[in-house]
Length: 403
Length: 135
Image 1 (spheres, each protein chain N blue to C red):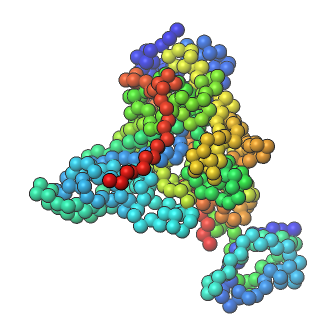
Image 2: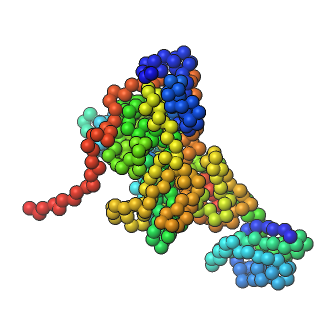
Image 3: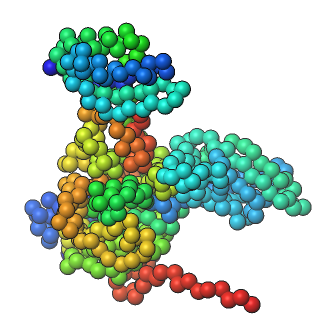
């Protein structure tokens, strides 16, 4: 018997909704059987807490007296440059932006100890940050410089807006070269001395709804400790990759673009993050509820780590040179055991996405729903799926012709 | 047999003293050098593990103190900031002694001070600056 989102919300309102996490549903469904579990369970909650570089926030800081037009000027928060190509007092701060005088990788490997993500974390923690700006001055916006402290509560709007988050599966990174390499997948030891992975596996949102049957535009989610919404598919959304019989992609596939009010979020779930030799990024906590509308949707949520496979990729040569090729397939049960075997060699593993925190998010979202504080939404439109014909294109460079 | 892990600081005038040799020859101690750093005009630092019988160990430590070296237990110099740790496990495949370890059921990271040899391999590997070495 199929359910509707309205019916589930009615049960949430009455405090009668049955909610389990994507981890708990596995044993529950095994014990009760798919049919019975689909009747009994209303919502399965997912979670993920990992570094997500394509994150950022936009702000409206209010007008100064006399007025200043930040648009077209240069604007910084704690010396981190923001993008101000908007109207007078709006700007966007990217997670990976860093101070102009940061040495980057000039002394290799760079530390990247501060940047946009840290500014976001500090703002969310309620701290003051320094807003500095220079502008060109107009008749209507005469002021040319601005130096002030500002905090989140002073601002009109502060909105997290992430254009690519919550990757549906990700590569496992190894290093085949004979030197240490510093990547966005962490520090990789030579000759496959270690391997890193980055997914919450069986708890990860899009791995529990592999064909995006319930997650779509407008889906209400846990975002950074507050409430957020799915804007649509994220950039590089690539549903057409190779999938297993269970429908689960065996390589990086779907992504989400998400947004939410930064003022309601928490520094625990938005963390400034530094990858040595690579750069700054933001670690984001996301939890997506999956309404159990029918048996098929429930079946997808019962996916286990051992049924989620991914590709081992060499980050010393294949990845940087954009050469295709996988060194082998491993599953998340193997990755989480601490050791995988790649081409006959045993390699110790490290995660970059916190499974402990992912579980905590799924549990928080579960509590919110059980307490009647969080209701599900019907997506306005579902995300492009395998039948969309989306092709993930590389950049085709075309030489500029001299006139 | 007793074991101690200590950080020795040498003032510049003691840098040419062969203290490790003395600990081995005069006090019959096993000395394992974990880290050593001597730079001109700076304090020298030596991180060592010393194993031996209690009286010998105490006599050796007295010798070091009398020679004018500053002695600090290693554990004080390595800090794991649990509040900064997200339990991502990035450090786990790099830590050579399992001082940083993970409970595989909970996927929760922990730090066992007495196993740490202050090799610092975890420092660049931790994206959250959760581990700090103070010397």
